[in-house]
Image (cartoon, rainbow, N blue to C red; front, side, top):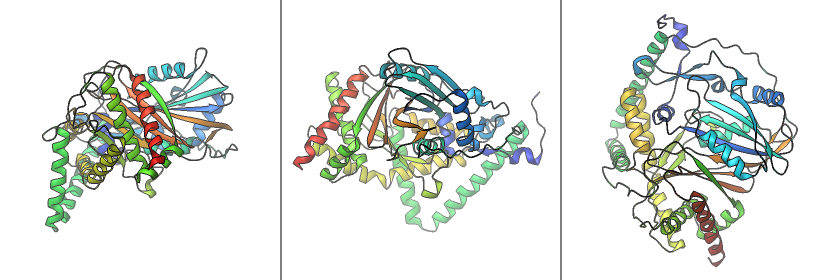
Length: 470
């Protein structure tokens, strides 16, 4: 029988997911998980399992989110809530394995791809950490898998700062004793969910009332939101269907490209633009090369979904998703590299002030509308094939090295999930002078992903070689 016992303490414990975090659960399906996976490569001999366990206890579990699970509100009458995982067992989340010889990047990629295809257990805290032995050149790896409802790209870098030390001599705080107290009852979750819905409804109405005092601002917000909805739902300006936008399956592949940050800085200075615009221009050129090699048309109107962090300085270190997005058109039909950079820069400047803000506003309506309706809206906004062709995200990382119990972190390799009818996802993380680009693909959708990786490398080099002439 369900537990419908209700006490005030039971429902006050519930902390509900934000609308954006909840959307990361809503878009998941059996073939398309919604988790982030980072491969950290270290120099030296791997720590023992006891040493890794001690470090995680001391440095990571201080964030309560890593000891919590997601609980659904009965009858879906509220957004899911974070509750203590009453069965939490750290040993369940820490795994250990070894690569077969010769332990090179191909073996590491194969292991990472297998893990990427496996969903996290929804009944437990939504993360895992794998220690991988057997890498060549006296190295080992740590693969951290965490659900997207817990973190965005920027928060993964905050987790790195929590988990690893900025010096070889670690300062590990003492472990605070902790015993799970259990989550709220079903009645508690129901009352908490309805209360949370009422609070957010009041905030939304209050914000609407404030906005109505300045009709021009209210009207502009409506126009911006309508444009965003029109773009994302395909009502206006729907993107063309391309080879990377076919139905896919559960298989995943990741290829990695490394680009020196000094080359990128020189390039962006020469073109008088930003690092992100250089990244988008190189990605556009790679798409052009790839489509030509595949005998595909260079379709006008291709768009990328580009996440934009809205995290403020005081919010650094906080988990969860604090991100909006813009949807720039990619000029794949433009043959001139310099012209492509200029077109990208103009498009991003045009969109940043309006489209990203409008999308953030639309996602936050999730605190006002019934969850069953918002789940469908958020799925439409995020995975509708008419809204964008691929995802391109760029996450700035640290410029100084991290350490794990004295072992130096030498590479940070991302692995991203794909979405239905979106078989290509580019995830970029910078670390100590190098931009690590992950080409994340569905092999059933994207043929010759390794060729696309080579195209991307050539596209970055093309812009770098043009820089001195400018």
